[in-house]
Length: 584
Image (cartoon, rainbow, N blue to C red; front, side):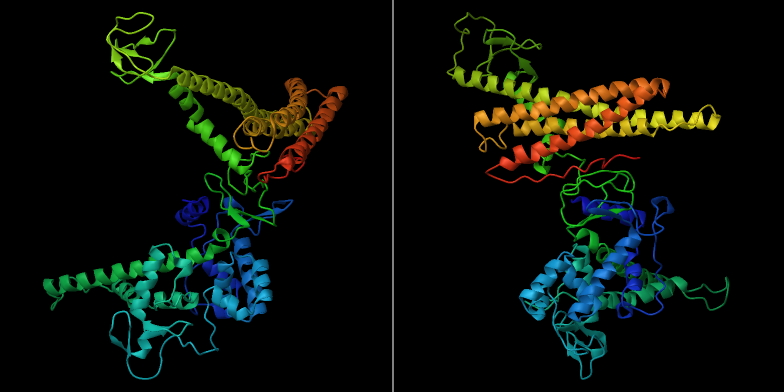
């Protein structure tokens, strides 16, 4: 299941986006209203989520959206297409969903081809105004080609394609498609038609389901006075209860389908839009992020969550999303550890526990007391010489096994080298955040007690810079694991070029690490006493600026001298934004 789908379901559960479609109806053209006097209330986000209006949180190339902003942007996009193509809002929305809300792609297609062919491609039928009457057609009974019953024209509906079926068959079709997750692309029931059903007509038919009215009437009925003469017999009461229960169940099913349909259509702007993603925070903060163009960015939501927009995982530049997926699998799936166990241990033929060979003899003994041959894994007796095991022989090619053990051990050692340093900086990354919180609390306590009121923003800034640098360094070790000596780019560089690239990378990495450790020591000293020594303050500020400069040079080297020289493929990463994660 995609993250978007999971976020949508979470939103449905929390009811924060439950009736966003109603907000959309109010924001769009009046003709988009499904029914005058609708009593459906728009559900707004919690005040805790800061929903007073479109979020003002933004950065270079991205912006944070809340419910109001999503509704507004969706309505604006539909209005633009209505003005350009001269179609009704529901048709414009269908076309935009087909083009994944990319107005530029839509306009480009319209410029290349005539608008009618573009609309047809999107599953929209072109009809004259009023030609596709929805219901109440004149003439004799019409045979529904689904249930094969003669139906009064007033109880039939035709879509823009002209195909007419009875309203009950349409409703069953809608509920089935919505239940199957096809709410945004409900097609006409006619064979080989393929036209997408009009959103207004779908909502109108579901709202006018007699079962909905019956369930409402049944629920509003009142019982007669107790003990009154002429009360209904128990049989009549039972029959009535059964009928009202059936109608109530049908009404609830229709209402649920209608709510799900409107909910799905309202969230289309996020789920079908390649430039918008829900914030992956847990629990979900209720916001989405929209990028202006390049999806390879690491935006920060107004809730404080920073993530890779492309893969929705934690920030991982300079690693590509593919690198990070594999690294995440390694550190959480322990694949390298499993490889080492497979190469260096054998399962005991009796208890199946892994046994490691710690000597030169091929007869090994498990703790359970079972002796077995290391070469073939078969159970044996304990009598043996240096040349053979009594009563046992095997023809296993030992050289191949030894080579496998050597390669696996070397691979595991290399992995542990990078993992340990990655983990070291990740632990420090977490600690920098804790230190920042403690520092702010101490400063606040000093101000409240009136002991001292001084500007320590330079010290807070240094801690923020340390946290950013720790994140960059930890990710750089994951990057080095794959880029140098791994399988991912081995065909792009010769051994000499790879060695030269690795030396260049590690030189920049070590310089950055050295400056980070220096600043960490300075910050530790200043934080202990909250000193106001001017020399210490200057040293901290200079080191903070130096780290930012080294990070910029580090990323420039990676993009130009490493990724820029790839031959077999291209690699895209999020561009490092100076002080993108810092809070002044």
